[in-house]
Image (cartoon, rainbow, N blue to C red; front, side, top):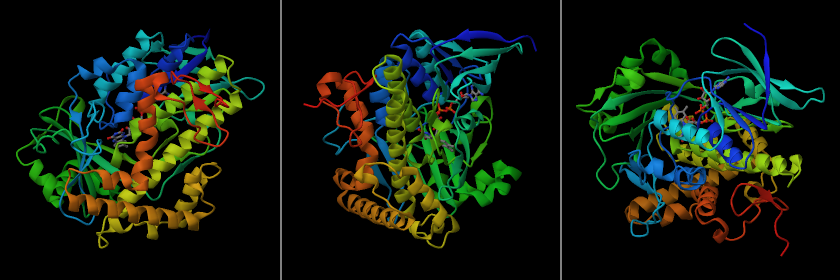
Length: 499
Ligand code: FAD
């Protein structure tokens, strides 16, 4: 290893996934010097292929990649199709309120992440970010006052380098250890404690139009399957099962996946005649476990966590890339505001952390309701996912996660009231699904009347409206009493106009 070399930037970002590219781009667009270090060389494989509209029409619009995404040929996702809950009939969740009222932004994409992530990373470089691939960040560096002041990384030839920056952003996903240096701990969820086994198939069946681009989620005794169309012929297929089945899967994943498919008649029928891809980036079966966690603190002076480095809930409603890019928008606003001298660091990052925790909490509740409404009490997987049977420590962890927020949304004082509230919200959501199935898929109104659905869509649609309309979107309303609002161009925080 040769001697260390030193450089200076305003911001250095660890990781070139959606969270890293988003943050780096939004900060570089304000004229700041941003370095992004990525361990791999893109395109690289990643899971997380089903997206939500606010990522596409909100954040990707701000990044300036709308046309590039439109011409990439990604399947259009109108929503999700679920064989889930009390009713055996599959039901559709559509991003538009009804099939008659669908706007130009009521869709998202199903993406091959190797392509999507490369579009975002190349765009970052075009917008002024210094992107260096094949560089592994090894540690964060502090100054004498305990403030993070830079990091060390290794060049492809083994040279160790040091970079100084006013902010280090950890966007390195779920695998790296950099997050530890923000302080606090990573807390794993027991409720969502599952394991995913996934692979890719050619020539699987498609849902009927207009839902052929939907994600299909099918519950069965041992867990649930996702079935995501990535092209007219390629499908991503994954089974989420209980953590206790890990040994079975590690033994022979091929036999395990085949066995799970055989247990689930709908997926078996959809894959009848399909062949598993066995070469290239999609050639291997992969396993992910312990993917559900949150870090107890999201920032310290000079350092901030975004995306999977900070938290991830569960794959069931495609929230991962949304939380990753949304957290990066919030953190970029904080960094831009502090670097421009508009807002003090503590106030700017408290706003970031409170909003990020709130959005994580909203999805946590929504996804808990999703699992709770399944009625298969005899199955180990589903009975463990009943809110009433949940571990007390888990609910305490949830209360801790959202506690201290001044929003009435999360007026929770203890784990007991947390459990009651989760139970009530779950029951209300299950009723909304039942009335949706009764009324037919034309009318999404019952779903959007459900508190958990409304909240899960609320902040995303706010981001989307603001990104599309800018100053014409009207004044932002603070999420917390006395809190900050977004500037008309979405790039900064500002005090609410007293008028
Ligand atoms: P990543 O995409 O992981 O990017 C982090 C980057 O950092 C990587 O490129 C990595 O190489 C780099 N890196 C790591 N360490 C270092 C280092 N030391 N130095 C330099 N670079 C480094 N989300 C959805 O939206 N939809 C889905 O359908 C969905 N399905 C999922 C299914 C499963 C089973 C799981 C586990 C997750 C799923 N997700 C889904 C979540 C999604 O994968 C993540 O939320 C998303 O990829 C997070 O993006 P990110 O940018 O934070 O991290």
